[in-house]
Image (cartoon, rainbow, N blue to C red; front, side, top):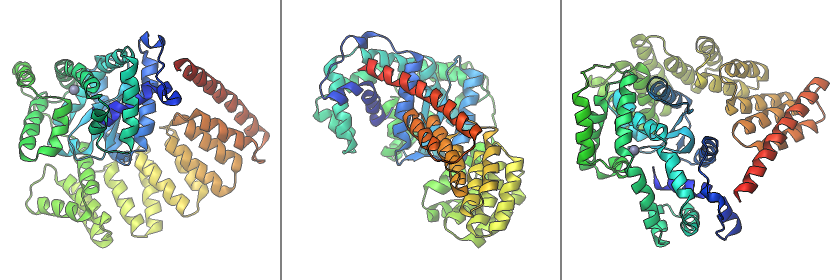
Length: 479
Ligand SMILES: [Zn+2]
């Protein structure tokens, strides 16, 4: 786990220290963490992470990551825990588990993995940290730690916010030891996470050898260019014992060839096209196509068309897209890229038709819903935008982004009650209940809306106030 999130975790654990400026933990810290508390803590940390400039909020890449992660969870892991996987734009090869089943994966890790089984092996290891309750145990241990170290860690977090070199900030405060203890605690669990991770990998139909191959790749990468690989190795020290242990287990596993999904290849091509500079990405894909050195021709053509789009070379992007279309079967990401190129090339009507057809063919593909609704809103067409959002909500009724798009459509129509009601629903789904209550109060005072809308909003406001009251009480108890 990167320093900053470890420290963020401490910050979330010690709100009273920050609020009062004086450490006063009392005896309540003896109780152990409940699953619900852990989830709330994870959500609190996620609210911070979502504002991080490196949070990589791409619907297609994130949906692929969640499909992969949830396949591992549903077929291999012994757990009732909900998992959410998210991406951070970072060249460092790393992944980390947070409290509450949130698992972060750096874009560098997906780009370094040469097969889906390799990527899956790292996810399976992190999932195992959660199912074996390693994080819960760290939290319990931390709850029982001394008042001073918690307070000092919280101060270190504040220092770190204005200083990117967090370990220096912590060390200056003399807390390096306390943090080191915490990491030692996780180090004890690496072997268990390896063991359970391999089981998850195998049960989910991936090649367990992906783990060994990926570790070898990491070691080679570390020798060649120190920086990107070292962050995974620092948080997951790769001892000889660990490698021997994994090899030992693999000796008993029959060889299995597992082909990569086209989704894996397309998600990686998209990341490479978006993360590098447009010129770098374009050169990379042009060269791999010219030399026929690729894992998937379709993915390389997708990557080239996406890079050309980013370079704003729309004529070339359209031409390359036609080649991609001929090489690929039907796929939501391919269709979406075609619509995206048309929209950017200002062929607005063709783009709208393209998105409308794509939304019909792939109603669960979030990127299509977002981009179609956004395009309609930009063109001032509120009504079809509301239809597009409603269509998306049939499959994702808890997606705050859809409610924000809905709010903008109502704003275009001048419907103020509906606008603030939708904004409130978005806030509630982002975990900001207080903001949601405020929005519903504004909605009721807006002066429009019929009797039915008013009473429905009042009922919802009562419900949200109850949740808000319960949360306030809980916070008071924590203090
Ligand atoms: Zn680990």
